[in-house]
Image 1 (cartoon, helix red, strand yellow):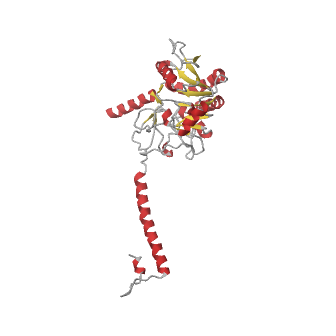
Image 2 (cartoon, helix red, strand yellow; image 1 turned 180 degrees about the vertical axis):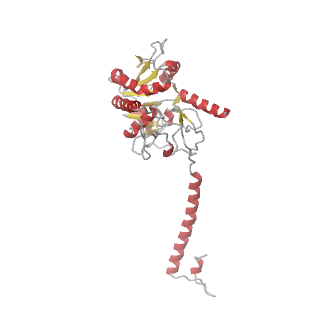
Image 3 (cartoon, rainbow, N blue to C red; image 1 turned 60 degrees about the horizontal axis):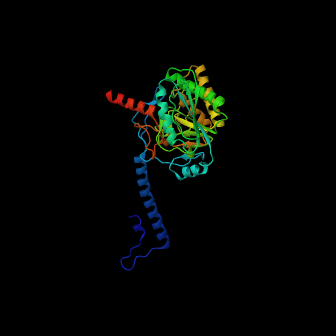
Length: 351
């Protein structure tokens, strides 16, 4: 009504307004519209605000708090804040990368540790990789195992594919194995892999390839987003927070939280990664410190200091749980973590 008070209304004749009154009327009308629109925007932002919950880890792997609320519609950016590609397998950028590299005849290594009871996963791991993992490229499977007969009888492989068994000493206990794995990978890359392949990827053997994985994953240093942490706010990431640990991450550090299920890169960069993580682990062991995420904590510390040149979406490391992000296509599924998540849900239901 304030706008109309500026209008001079005589008892007879047409309504007249001076130029100043007209300008003031338009200005006040603009203020009213701005105010109303601002209130509407503030209301929508308030309703979309995420609820925060504290996360913890049990035995360094299983998320305790299953009540975390994530954003309903997760964005799928194609690039990281520092300009590295963030790979979604069905994107146009991924298709271009595949087309660019598919005819180059690249030799890639897939390195996995098979000890103790994990031997039951190895045949499924290799058989599924034969179908989905870089099917048009030469691939060597490097199997670090404490049992030379793990792969008897041999898995049938396609042309240009081979298996190399690398013996290691038996390492009882999962926690001990998690601490020793980086050292074992360091030795394997240095003495067995170094000059044989151009790229090497490390993967947990208790996984299964269920969708196509092509040349879009190739890069100098490649990390994979953790499917349960993806979509959470930065202050929810389960980085190591003990200041005495060499894996400790400060509040203002870190862009993403990565899984230790699948990572890789050029042989030279991977040699640096596993060696760097080994040094961090040995430093904590000397000081009798245990990082809560074990191997994954040290991997994330390293990748903060050395940002990946290629980041894979959770399509490339996924498992069923109440926290995992929705992905357009599942490509690599962790059977071990999926079982762990299921067991935790079952325990919570029984309590």
